Picture 1 (cartoon, rainbow, N blue to C red):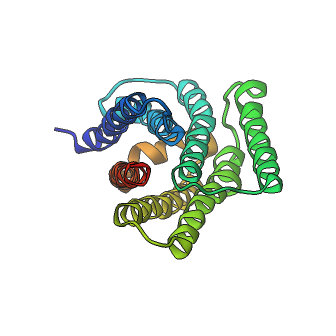
Picture 2 (tube, rainbow, N blue to C red):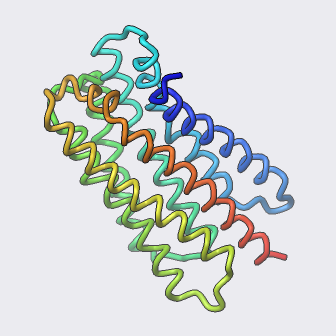
Length: 237
């Protein structure tokens, strides 16, 4: 058994199964279905598909550099969208209201991110021939969004009174995942720079610790979403 196929496949399967669970939970919450469940369901469904070519490579399947580049060019904006869904879900679940100015800034920044990803996907046809996509994608867009999510949750724990045990547990799990995600982002950058940009997928297919951390991330998200769901259901009852 190839463990480096099992680890990424486990993260992918757990993400999809939990996504289905959250969607069913959202559907079974009439008459007012909580948006955060739908946000998190979508996030988990979108977040881990980039592992598919890595799984296939470790299984020995032959592929081309162009196919890898094209796939990763697609998954960069998809993963970013998943992180937005997590953040929006956190705001909704914890009933956090941000100002109109903050909403405008967040919208414009998200729009800039999508324009950046669209440029690489459409204009450059998914061809990765520089370090721009992995570096800017991770540092300028992924890192701030993960940090924003973690800081929002820390602020909630600090300010929330009375504190709900399930809520605190859920928040702690999601904060841990955000920090782990930030660590992964910079881990990728460190190793990506060791290879020509056209072959940076070699980093992912050979970076075994990445898949261990990825599996840990999905487990943290599963527990985080579960406990926050329980906390919010208790709050509504």
